Image (cartoon, rainbow, N blue to C red):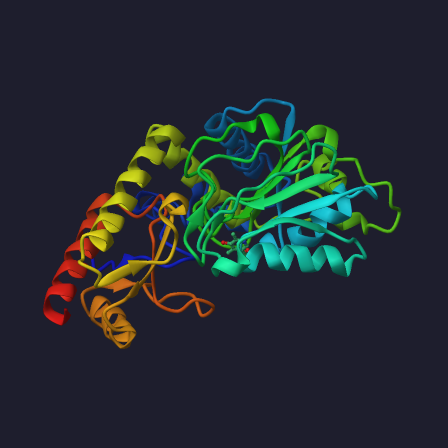
Length: 359
Ligand SMILES: *Cc1c(COP(=O)(O)O)cnc(C)c1O
């Protein structure tokens, strides 16, 4: 089979086992004579998939009935406004600004007429690090992005606060265990670490579901609507949820989140070591203490003119998706759960040879 090694930032690599499983039953789901795509979202057969995926998410994070799991649509982008619409109560909406995605979330809060407080920002450092974040203990919510996909920075530990912590985990969902004691809401689009685009996963503490007092929040945009309907209020993206369910099963088969975290740390270290031992040929974007295990953003410090050549030659060698985000440029290797250590070793080998030939 002629599969490329896929370092795309999102949508991104899915486990081959998951794709093969889906392929094997694409036209004839569990020998029932139809595809999972072709039946009602209210059928027993689909419900097993839908609630099965929710159960697996609970098992992976070790969370109980105090949280509700929602499958929504509209991507992370719709959450930028749904979060303040549902959680803001006229007090403080606090944000830590660590890049493009938190900036967009702050703008959406402003659009709603809320005056968000930016309690920490790494903008003056070109978002190359996670700033020290101190939230107050009485905010309506305290908002962070746990992994900054573009700059390759990641919180090593979640900030401590008594306010409900809201986390955009789009690019490190299911990549490590999390301490849920502060978490009010954890969300992300599925397309980076959990499945195809189209499903947004929202894990919300139950006491926050029905918080909004505003009658102006559209019914469809209330968490309560979707929680009461068990995420079957309207037709959900059934095929996406099916693939999400398979990916969650794959994660459980890998030994769960602590095992996948170990693998991810090992993969990331292989690339960072290559950067750090390149004698200045490569330069990582993120500060050492803020480096992400998911997205490694770097430059060719020797000459940035070599970067397009790097990307083109990598592509010829079967490696995709290495061009940096348009906001930052350079090179970015996204090494989500489905990217294997073998895949990363091939990249590292390529990096070393490229530096030797061009250094
Ligand atoms: C990709 C990404 C988004 C945007 O996700 P959409 O599903 O396209 O809205 C938001 N936040 C983070 C951290 C991301 O990586």
